[in-house]
Length: 331
Image 1 (cartoon, rainbow, N blue to C red):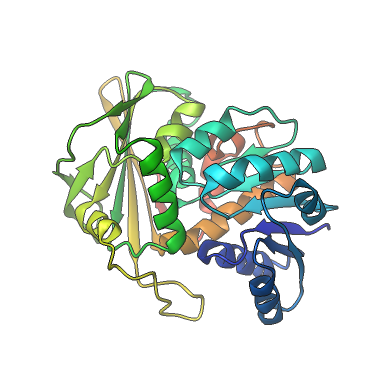
Image 2 (image 1 turned 135 degrees about the horizontal axis):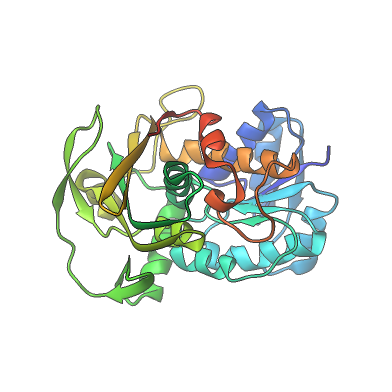
């Protein structure tokens, strides 16, 4: 089997993705802008190939993807990296998967045409909520409202998360986003708080509604829905916006932090409510099996469509969720 290239392998999430590929015994190439750090990590990981490449160097990207099976892009901000890496993947005629949580980057990727599979937002934000929503609906493709509540015990953002968040903030001139009336809308409303009753162990928590994440792009990209709202626990939002909050710290051999999460999805159709929930540990670590399982399924031909599509459209959502290291409750 040809190798899977991880672009942005030196980053926090990129390292989890590389280790997930190696755990599964898949040939792996590590790529990115920093040749020295790539070589240092290669000496730790052992059986990986190193191919440095900058996103503004198409020839180097072509060399990095030469004879590869697929590429997973973990290098943010994705508004800068997604287009050149997608274009390199299209030239190489190989599948592209990324872990972008940036709404603008995901919109741009979904607006492309490709003959090979291209799956943006195959991550904790965007991908997981899309899979849960699609699993709830089954074969239905229409609903009225989708609500995705993120119950994070804490949020210690990586430098990449902070950089991507600043880019998005600047592109929107500080405005916020909502998906209502079947479309994305910018607004200047001040954040408010309300209660959300999560399944245990979280229970009743204060959340910020319209704390808008990538689900407002992924879910309506393939489902007819009027309203998609995402919510974030206040504690996690405070951590994120506090400049002094440190980066995540590993507390176990797998490298995961002690952060726990509950993703609670409520789907409302004709007044009838259905829920799906996923529980796990470390939002960055869980992105790795999401992205790697996506590549495995693409390469195995276990897809429902081709070209550019999000997780819910590309895969059998229920079966995909059952193969993740998560505790999942479906209706």
